[in-house]
Amino acid sequence: MNSYENKNLILAMSLMLAVWLGFSILFPPVKQEQVTPTEPPAADQATAETAAPTITPGPAKIQPLNEAGTVSPAVTDNSVPGREITIETDKYQAVFTTQGARLVSFKLKDYKATAAEDAPPVQMFESGPLRYATLRTTGTEGFVLNEDARFETASANLVEINGDAQYELRFKHVAANGMQYVKTYRLLGDRYTIDTTMELANTAATPLRGSLGFALVQHWDENQDSNMYDMYSFIGPATLNKEEIEEVDVDDLKEGSVAYGADVSWTSFQTKYFLSVVVPGTGSSERIEIRRKGDAVENLIETPVITLQPGERKALDYLVFIGPKDAEQLKAAGHNLDKVVHFGFFNILAQPLFLVLTFFYGYFKNYGVAIILLTVLIKIIFWPLTHKSYSSMKAMQKLQPEMQKLREKHSGDKERLNKEMMALYKTHSVNPLGGCLPMLVQIPVFFALYKVLLDSIALRHADFAFWLTDLSAKDPYYITPVLMGASMFVQQKMTPTTADPMQAKIFMMMPIIFTFMFLNFPSGLVIYWLVNNLLTILQQYFIHRKKA
Image 1 (tube, rainbow, N blue to C red):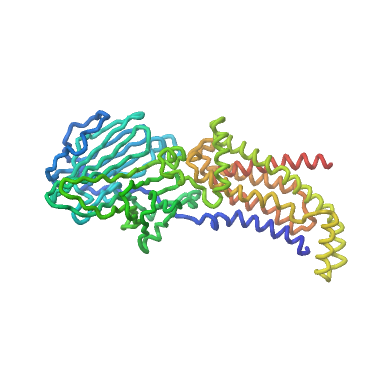
Image 2 (tube, one colour; image 1 turned 90 degrees about the vertical axis):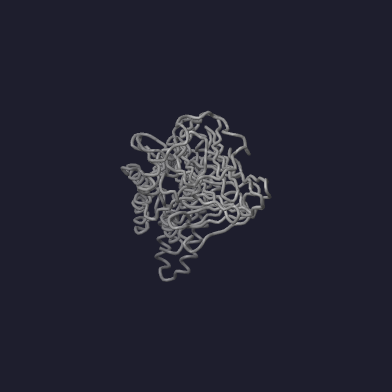
């Protein structure tokens, strides 16, 4: 083969390598960690079992407990056993503790851990040792506040909130130096947002000066296994700093923390499909530090130094969102939270694909059908290009006798052979690389659709038909990858080739290589490639029939 013919072969092999290695280059593997803390120690369990509630358990009325500023300035008794308050809404079940007025458990009712019918709900935070409790508040200097400080609340042990109803869960703590803390969570029955306020009041006779820290706390398990199709999704802390999302590798935090200034809009901990995020209000954040403490990752929001005169009050506000990476929910929450829904390097292509996919889903209520229709649409767009490519390959096939004569004539002079080949291509208006052009153009679309199917929560556990119950996961029986490989084999058989036997063998290896590649890809992506192959076979059949 001369150098011009080799370009076809080299390009085809490069395309295979691009798909094979592209994911590891463009989407570096990120070790997936399951944020599931260990079981609480026996001592903690005993405390929870023997804690005496201060009020009778039962549903509470959906109304504020008391007006701000009417709490008693009496010093809180830290020896009182802690208790838990469970909040049931349409969206989630949240459990708070009076020990630090923190969140210890959070379950999402609309999302299951697996696609199984009897699967438990997704747990954003799971009850365990209190060091993992999140929405933690601590203080320094005159604002001394321990993370385990006992808070008082008038709330019932169980509160149910439905629809658009609201509820204020209010905790109070008064320190020995006279600093009074009132921590209020405003919860909604149909939203994942929690408006949080820490109201400070100086009940002492002298000024008090200090700062507060408000932190997301996430348990981090190094030994948790990851699923094959999850390995390319980011998991860890991410912060919107100066309008750009900055992600931090948890492993890098072993070398030291990462700090941000006052330009931060929000800070979060993200998994593949879910996130917990805090948006600090005006004056509530001067510095944000992402750090690792043992097996916990913390997003710590630090206030400026505050001085309160006797009788003076100050409120610090935070918006908390704990839930799915759902674009509509995040956009409704504001503060550019919807920037979380991003498909990486190919986002400019992925976003339109996702919009078209959801458009089709709106009509058919089946993402498998939506993927097939999207494939047909993409094929229609690429139809003229494919047609031109097929014609180019047919023309190259017709030139084989003349190309063979040139090889024999100039077998000892490669430079002359290349010039003669170039002249032959030019005379017959043939592009030797034209046959590979459609695949080259479709690779970015392939990667973009891969990210959509991999990272979009809309596709999570999306059912198609028969055994395909989760289009974001691999085919459990590998049926679709095998069918895809078979269709690719038929497509290669119908594609015009050169007379070179080595090149033909390499092209025929592609179905085998792609089949093994696709075994662990999301089944939705395999469906796309399978349908695309079938449409290409149909197109080649009609083109061949027309030319015949």
